[in-house]
Length: 165
Image 1 (cartoon, rainbow, N blue to C red):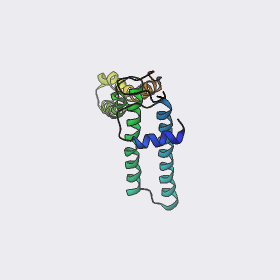
Image 2: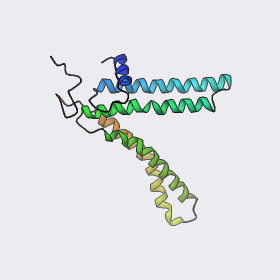
Image 3: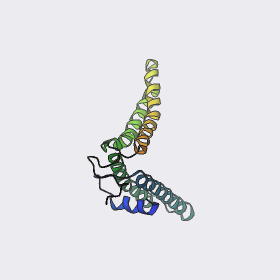
Image 4: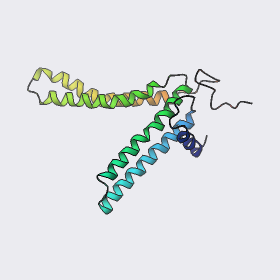
């Protein structure tokens, strides 16, 4: 599958969480997603620095676009996990890890501000966990998404890489 085909398929199946997606389909689409978000952010920075417009409504529009574009990536990842024979819910783990990391960070911050020295170890564990949790969640997702396809059909559908006569 080419880059353009992967982007078309990814956008065409933007909210389709059933079926299977091959490795090239997912990774080309993920690359296009990253490039688009970087370009969108560069445009925001250019407009902000050159014309002093970029705050307020435009920044909100950029953030909304990036949030909306996560749905097609989530759907593609969901289908990619189906292609490996796994259910799609592990794709939600990195999305859940980030808010949990923020909570742990603020717990650690609150403990550091308290005047109880006996909580030092708990604060250290919370601070370390707030850093490591998203890293391990992302690494686990990359590992699962990089696994090879199940040959032949599985319970999620036919193999997208195999040509049927």
